[in-house]
Length: 204
Image (cartoon, rainbow, N blue to C red; front, top):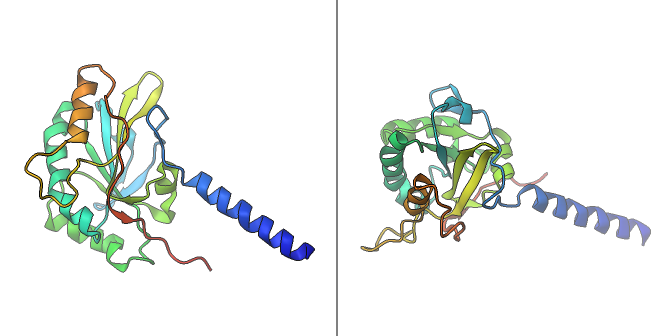
């Protein structure tokens, strides 16, 4: 009986610890910096953009239908806002052992085929994914540079049209950046991201 209780206790603490590790960041919290390998083989971090005013960090992948549906919209975000100080940084959160089509070489091929104008980073061991608490692909974080460091301003969906079928969209990401450029806090700081769950290899 004692052994059973001990086993259950360890299991509960393990679950709680895992949940604590993957709690999704919220607006107002510090956005952890990172140094991850880009598809061109170079390492990329926030420090790679000394003149940036902030960042559009998006956890996305090769395989999820929702991520595929948002590919062009993510490209358009970078084209529109990089010159205004808000570049896109894309991170693949999927473990390639759990999703073979999200391997580094497949990421390189996709970035080349789609002519990604932004870095597409490989998160070895899903460390950054867990730091940010990214749960789905795509999962967006808009970050601003401040005197207090890099601060999360918005977390959630890119817009309210995951299927790409609406003629009238609420463009959450664009609205947030418009507010930040006007030195105002965004009216909406969190929405529900719609996408595929982050792929993790089975526990041994």
